[in-house]
Image (cartoon, rainbow, N blue to C red):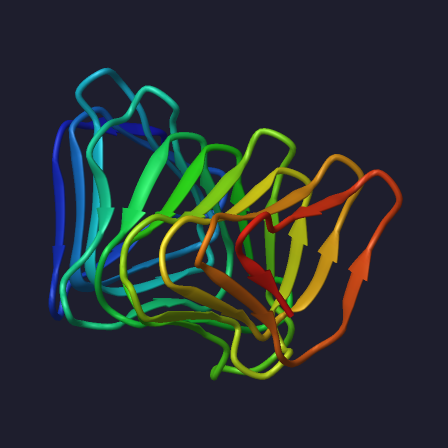
Amino acid sequence: SDQTLNNVDVATGAVLTVDAGVTLTINGTLNLNGGTIQGLGAINVTGALSTFVWSGGTIQGTTTTIAASSTNNVINGASSKNLVSGTFINNATITWSNGTFFFGNTGTSFLNNGTFDITNDLTFSHSIGGSPTFTNSSTGIISKSAGTGTTTFGNNGGVVLNNSGQLNILSGTMNVGATFTNNSGGSVNVTAGKTINFNSGSQAFNSGSSVNAVGGAAT
């Protein structure tokens, strides 16, 4: 049956299973710290005081939704993060500051309706296999806002990156090694002195999309 909890800590060695047809609502903090979240159910992190902290570990199978009301959501810590199946939906602001993000398997999806803020020079890596999809919706913002080096988004063309919102390069360089589509209404924005490189996979820039690189570089 459906459950509502305040705070959940999934530490190294721990497994949280949410069965099909079950919704787990978390009104406080969901802390994924080295353990595994699995199952075919749904997890909703919601409420004015809710927070999602992912400092290591794996999500597989579940539909995990971060509500717009949640705050101080972070993907941090040096340990790797693995999204290997299921759906992750961000409706809030999540800051990815540390730890390589492994994203893989066909059918795995990350839907960004909020802000995915990148403040590192790491890799959103496709090394698990398959063709996972990252969708930046019309309300979504992906920003590299810190880190003077290079962030790599998809490293061999296996990740599918669909952009209908904003992809903003505000600091350093972003290498897009994904199969990339800039849909109508989608924009790629590169500020002065910054760079975006499309260096593997295929790219499509559809009618109604834009690339703005005044003083920056898009290659």
